[in-house]
Image (cartoon, rainbow, N blue to C red; front, side, top):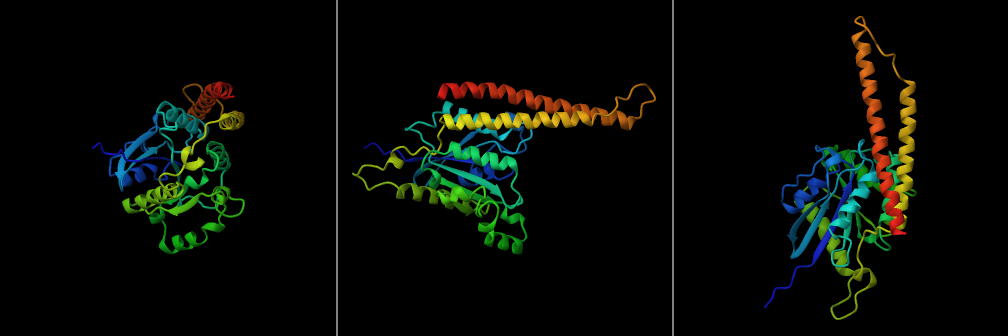
Length: 302
């Protein structure tokens, strides 16, 4: 008798650099996960990490970290979406079942950057309709905090600028996302995944009955025109901000030291300034090239 194939759950891991995505994947799977924060983010690609849990085939998709100086969040999300399309992970036969957003509590829970608000806006465009209940926000790095402070932080989490009224995560949770504490262990990672599986199974009707619309088309990720248009808008905003940085940097240009009597300290200052200018210009050029590709994607999806 042919053995029934195990049900597969594909879960996307996203978060800032240092949030613990690779560590989560390593704990959950028991495998060595090579994608890491010490690698050059520009060379990182997503990595599929498969393993079995409770008779289910789990595939965690480990992704490069956000808040990278060389590659912006817009570029990272676009690259991840392209990789998922190339791997066939956005089809009915191989859907993305859930998304885990990992966030380290060692970062100021009340300090919301403009970049994080833009990223949240992008994620809202990326998420499919009625898919927020398949989103888990996993807070990490609790062991790095003083136990008394950690307990106070956990009690006040719902009042923070992330979960409180108007916070970047508030709408996610209001629309069905859950927030869980991840304690950097195998048991904790498995617990989060098991709750994702339970929520998904609970949404399905008993055998013999027609599955719900959400179950029949359970892709969490939606790469429609609105997502790509938002990518274009945010990348244009990013490029304009970098151009302003270049203008400000040029205002601070030191005098070029010449001759044998030039002060070594002044020579070093000018070299550092020149290096920073070149890096800013390279970032603008790379983002402009990416923007041209995105505009093509917008046209092709409309």
